[in-house]
Image (tube, rainbow, N blue to C red; front, side, top):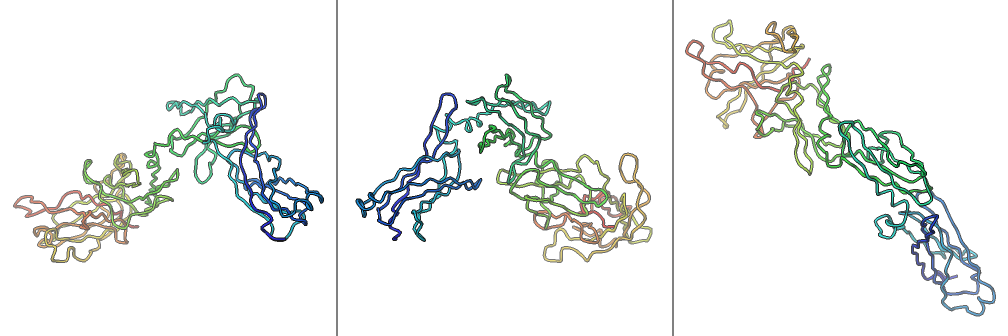
Length: 435
């Protein structure tokens, strides 16, 4: 039998409404065929792509009709198949008996709640008419759920919308005959992906979501953790986000935060920076299509940071750079030329001599003695015009850099005739010394 026997398959959605039972959706199937003497009937089957549920209907053609109308074109109207809002279906039309390859296949998507008629009449779509009030002081959302024709119960819950909407609390069931349609759902944090999800307690009910805090993206940047033992700074997204994270150095509150080289990371997963110093100017910068945000976790000085001072050394002709740290540490020091770009910008790194760690005072600041490490610098080199001191960890810890690539350092300043020159008493350097 030729495949041309089955000419066309038309699909459409119909709605049937009852004053007491409400409305339901049905799939209408119309087949166009060319009648053949060997064609005893037709079968059409629908299969739900979501539940794999299959429904089939058959139509028989009498022998007399086949002989009388052979070669003529006919239209066959099948009975309706009950379907659901936004359901995806695979529809197959075959001959009876089945001839290999003689069939028509179609994909069909039932209209969703954006359709005006469905939105106004289908109980599943009325789930989208959730009304709510956010009580930030009590960290709770007061939700009023809709009524349904037929008195169906209703479920509502909080969930975090990732690939699926993950539980953020138990689902609350509101009986269809309940006098009050309001429930209070507590939440822990106002996140942009925290959503209300509601659905009627009916088979294949459509779930509707609305997210009260969808514009509160700034809440994502608060999930910063610092681990004093491993000296690691980390951040993990609490909601899906597309963008990047980087370390940056904020020299002044109103200044631009200068990104540190090699610190940029994608924001879609956990970000971890090992061996980070707890300097107040060290910050995390978050960048998305919606803007930039900077968070400085050490600005409140909750963690002790290392410091550097420079004084005349016991040996004549040298300056001593002394480092104070609350934990055992190693430091590297470079002398850099600030105003001579034609020359090598910095000398080779010199290792500071490690000493026992300084004790920490009760308010979290390193004590003045003993020092963690020291290094004697040649007086004539350190006091030359335009010379700066760059400090970094000896094993590749984070070293701050300006946007133009120059090192962020402490530079010499005049200090009187007795000394000749002196460096800044406290250097704003980021790298945490490595154990």
